[in-house]
Image 1 (cartoon, one colour):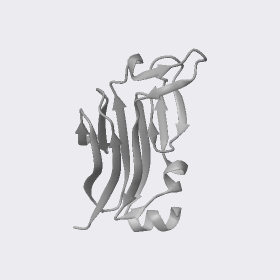
Image 2: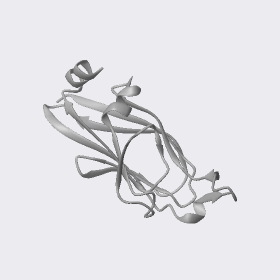
Image 3: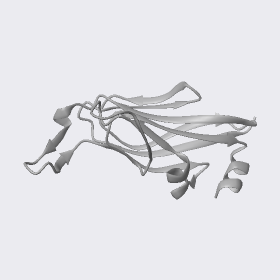
Length: 141
């Protein structure tokens, strides 16, 4: 059985923010405190369609400091600095393929945005891909 290694480089400041990673609806990793470093998930590379989800929750109004002009002075966010399949960094492909679902922590209607690597609101980044991973990479890079 061949496997694919999914690697995410996470920068998570803590501050009561929670980060979970799901693969095909199953919990693959979670952290309820500060964490910085790689997260590695191994998966079967048999032919199929898969969904990777990166979920942030626990953000509260006190995590964001806003000045008198309404500008953000300080904010608690989680960054995904790199996402790679079998050590191949997806780079801009993440922006093209991943969708960030959130509602600005309850202050707006649900929104779908491109994902540029930063989770600043409670929500879910969702990216669909197929295996074998090398075929998906060839078709999409």
